[in-house]
Length: 291
Length: 339
Image 1 (cartoon, rainbow over the protein chains, first blue to last red):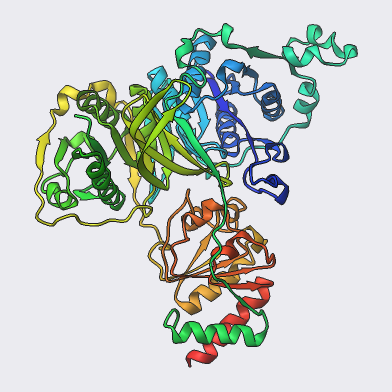
Image 2 (cartoon, rainbow over the protein chains, first blue to last red):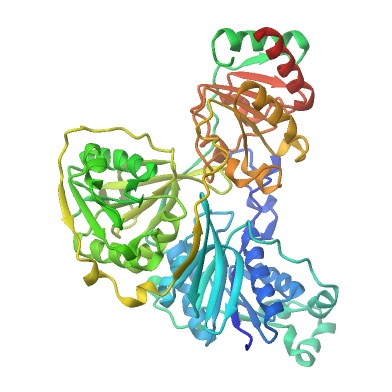
């Protein structure tokens, strides 16, 4: 069986999982600069699924597609280091303020421009929003069936993929025709680590915008080794209806944002010594909270 | 037209808890908006399902019954909902933030070009003034949810597009019967006119619905661990305490992400919501997303080495110290005083 043409959708996100003390400013707003930008965790699971398919079907070609500011090219380099074949950065101020619907519109228009594909793989959700909407919305816009929450590829047959999905109370195995969009759960296998050879090969990979500010000594590299040029598309390179882009194309609006202020409650401080803990347990027992 | 709709999940004729919770909320929203509450059930074994739903104040129940519609598959359910919403133009549409609702909701919102807010922890009706455009929108649905790792709470609105769609997790809204004698109207949908053969291309090969072995949600006492527990091994202490007290072990998202506990134990906005009579938070800092899932616990004990841990602000009892030293003391004095 021939290899598949796979598109992996990935997002660079602020690492909201281990928010340190400097992540909040004195006025209580989020200090985005203090949060490191990372490869969205479930998108790494998605990349692994694509790489797994490539292991099974040599000849498979994996293109990573990401939308974001210029620095999101880091995601594409990271993908190269782990085995992706190609990458496209979709970057334009016109995309700023996009909600999930405007994002999926822009991504789906970029995918249309990319030409033929067999499979689109995305992480279930991104940790900065946790919405899990972009995958299914891209599928709808492209008229593809969707299989969400995939944790394992069971088999790949000509024109058909069978996968195991993780649901709330169990698992479901489904088989679906290609072309298809799947979203991958965090319970799927972790992504393989960077490959040393690929790291050497791609460490200078850059977008056009990045090359403009690169060290002149390296400029010849981008002519000699075409694979080091990361494709960068602005809004003018894809066919779009401006009314569906960015803020204007987003049905949801943020009315207001409240910083989290904890309401103090009358808390009792319990000494952590033997007496303190014994008194607490006696109190909880006598109030029938425990026992 | 322009009513409040709730997509109700059902399996073998039993409507899901989360759907009943949403009907309760939907009824209140419909009262405030002075419109009707309509429910949609799509499945195969729907005989008598109206008896489960009408007591929640459902004015109109749309039933799509066909053997091919159960178990749930994305495309046929989406086609039916899109068709129905195009015809009925709901102003509000609610779905459970379940694996089904979160699979179906975005597909439908994309087709209708309407806004969808995931995992809401609050739904309210309110106005919105757009000063730039000099327009005032009356009676919008405020969709309230934590965002950005729980450091902020966002209120989302959809001023110009309908339906205003939202998903809500199980346990977030309270289920309450409106009137056990309430009677609505049943509208049977013509399934064949709403679906096409292309909607059935995804085949379910196998399905085993394992009952969740752990039942954190139903436990009267929950001993929960956070990232501050430091390791999976340290979680053993929590199991020990939970066992002695007759409770269950829960975990924060950070602890689950770190591999200290399984997903089925995750408490918070993206996990389960619990209201036990006692919640013992061990090494949990208490981000809003976690608190959204446990702050209604009757009593909260926080054990943390950091006296400034945010969770302490909502705790009834605060113990500053090392969990590894405090839990054995709790076990010891519990045993001593209950003998």
